[in-house]
Image (cartoon, rainbow, N blue to C red; front, side):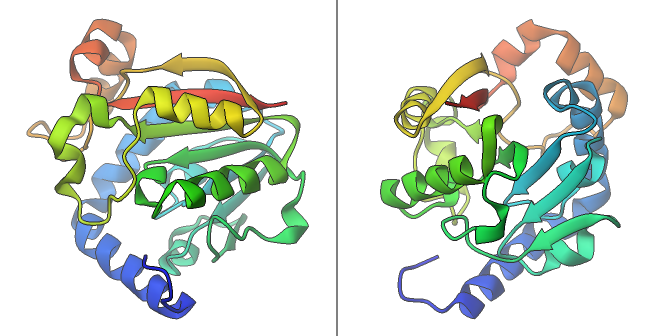
Length: 227
């Protein structure tokens, strides 16, 4: 997502990359996200919350979460096709979220996205927009590959451009006006493309057994509150 390219070109590029990466395993990803959302992420979301999924991709999280209002943001126009009925979809950049969403969301969910931003300036601009659309006291939930844990495998994906550890992620959140309220430095494996089949039972066992997360977890999860 290079500076100077048109909005339409960026949309085409995102759609092409993600279609090649995910389409053949879409059913497995739905199972993965339904299970993770029901048995882990849902604890941070109330039934009447307004939830915004930033860089929603194929909408697996926002389709699965139970809440009062659902909003999905993504540059990829395919998001609108994948969203369940009732999900509001906006096709826009993370640094230019719709003005009408100011102080709308109780929760913003961001998964595997910040590593795709071009630089720190774009990262901080995105955090500023997240803070703007959150209600006072609203929460941002971030699931993020951690380069300290993944090592060189962080660069196995051609669209990864911004390296982040848990420390740089936490510092950026604090500098942007957020207070950490929950964290798991070692949470999920780096990628779902493992040797084992995607199974609801195996995912639930993984979530229930923290020592395995410590061994296999390469992604950091943090919840931070808007100050």
